[in-house]
Length: 278
Image (cartoon, rainbow, N blue to C red; front, top):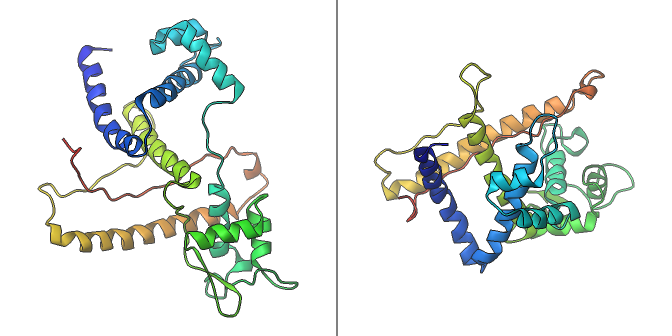
């Protein structure tokens, strides 16, 4: 790698790291703590993604690729092999599946496709307990209800039934679910950009990634109107895409069952420049 490319990558990472480091400093995470995580990730990625065809990646090769000593590589490899690497156990996917089913599954929607108000339990007809049993895995219905009420996604009506208020699950800041969502959102966006950077000119097209921005900035008094426009248009697009995905998931055929599933999705974000936009 040329010196100019190295300099360019480091300059780009400096911009990328500014908001990430700000989050760490704000919440009392030290350089020593994050440096341990970084060493662990360097070893994990070098071993997993840069192996030679038909050969197991040796610790010496990982040391060469990462610049870490073989002793440090062995230490980080032991952490990875033991399963002790930092991770977040989360109900994120289970909660999201319940909300999606409440909005999409015929049993839990009305004649116009709107989600039904559900009793907690019912001997006959749809209920919240049945919804959770079918779509949340092993999470209890009471724990699911507590979480959905906590984030304002569900409201209890005077009749005792429960009304769903949100289609998407946005966990409260600094809860484990929110931290996992933060990591996944940033990872997925950066992975898309990395994929497009390394695609071959004669290869398949890159993944969709576009941006629109005000070249000379936008007047501050127009920001509320711009935010409202983004939320409305962005929400409608995501609902349309979600409906398409749900329709494909219900069309399972015999041949399709043998086809590998690909983790995929679309994210939309509204950025506002700050002091780190140099």
